[in-house]
Length: 172
Ligand SMILES: Cc1cc2nc3c(=O)[nH]c(=O)nc-3n(C[C@H](O)[C@H](O)[C@H](O)COP(=O)(O)O)c2cc1C
Image (cartoon, rainbow, N blue to C red; front, side, top):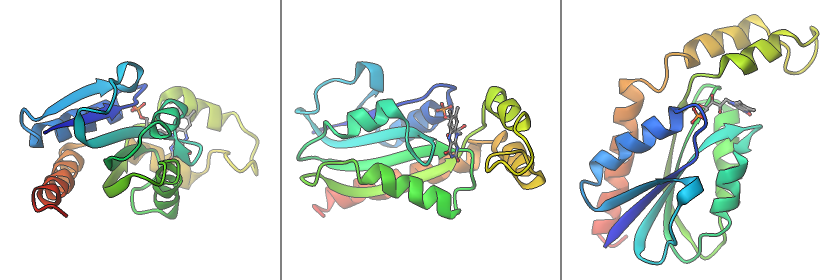
């Protein structure tokens, strides 16, 4: 049976991860941007990729997640924050919570993705003390994010999805 990868990406980070993941599925996968996602009926696993927007999946991915029923699902995402942060874990959990209960979530992957300079500039314009004002920590995070997703992230994403596929082949 075929698998489906649907991703939502504005500046290309999540798309890059989606394309890396597609490689571990060989030919048994169709890959679509969320805007042209096909019906899920013919697919076994649905892998949904999103960019983190204010602590959850971006709006297009949110709408798509809510439409999935009775499927094996895996999630992947990119964000500006560090992937091992509480914010990353919460953002993934918030997205997972949007999936209807009749699905089975098999795994997830999250990594940093460069933050568009428009957003970085916006933070710089905020007054000191504002919760999103630019701080040395935030600046360092954005500088690090600018290097991602890198080859190591893409490898980790592939490893995560290879083990998800193994679970499926073992009937788990
Ligand atoms: C409007 C907006 C909101 C964002 N909100 C968050 C956020 O809450 N947390 C975070 O870590 N990154 C946030 N980001 C950063 C993006 O999630 C990150 O740059 C992502 O890799 C973009 O993915 P894309 O290139 O696939 O569009 C935000 C970016 C934008 C433009």
